[in-house]
Image (tube, rainbow, N blue to C red):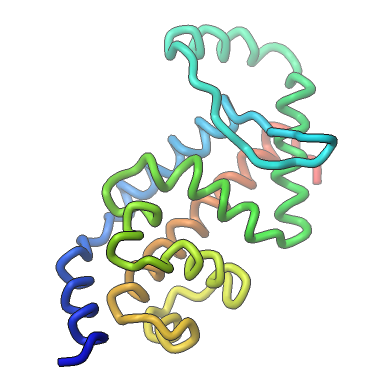
Length: 183
């Protein structure tokens, strides 16, 4: 058994069961809600550098959301939502995938892309490459051949790709609704 065989065996030990669709839907809805409610566009020298989520008291958030529903969006929220929609219109998968990794995937469970680095050191790059090479592909066999990775990592990325696609669709739909159907 060569190094590749050993790595495949070790990887299979760490591969977890798939998350069910109900669990995915709940996590995606929560993540999108958090991003749109507490997301902040980080701008340095007039250039968007990233998106982060501000932490605050949950009771305060609930009260503020109820009050804010009768008012217009703040300029900062409009800017964030327009930025997200502009990323989608320019097919900037890389930036959207980074937002997904930073704001959604890591918080969900032990199966986040970043937490799998010890099993597959190149998994973040592979997830990013998946977005630029074949952003809609979810077939593990095709992913395995195209990215030249193990069967287990391909299965993991296939699952992440499907979850990312659902998250992205939910995020874009919510952003459009909050902006009143613009773009």
